[in-house]
Image 1 (cartoon, one colour):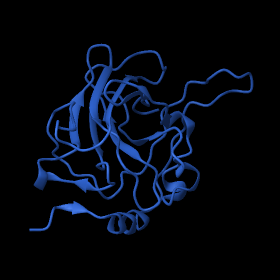
Image 2 (cartoon, rainbow, N blue to C red):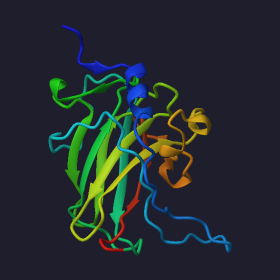
Image 3 (cartoon, one colour):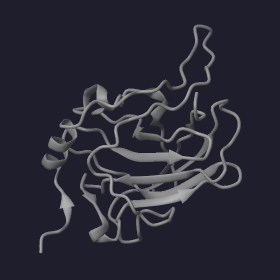
Length: 202
């Protein structure tokens, strides 16, 4: 039986068939050089989302090939200061070769988790591979009562594909607030990705 993965060509064809995502503002530097408080930008969901992933923060099992990666962050409300406890994160990504896996493989590299009382989360996974002219990325949806749900993507500083992403403006992968730097961690590397949600009705 063929492995239930999705090859790069089929992913790209399905992705480019989707309409451009509606983008919301992100934090931007003001003329004075200080950061303004604006929500994290959205990004398109893409065709590889699969609902029903299990609750877990460890997305990559010990036998998963690839460089180990730990992502930490805090989910904040629209004031950029108030943490949002028990926000639900639904996370999915490609493997190290740029292939996605679904429920037929026990939701490999997919999971849902809640932020803690301080609005913080941690994910242990592997660094995803790029595919079809797309930079490496991790998908997130974030939702919490009293806030608008957010679908977005995280990217990695130094990825050479960032400046010519085949997804085009639909993904807005050049947004500097969703491109994270990685630091060494034994084993692998680690990065921080904070999320700012819009209040509902704002």
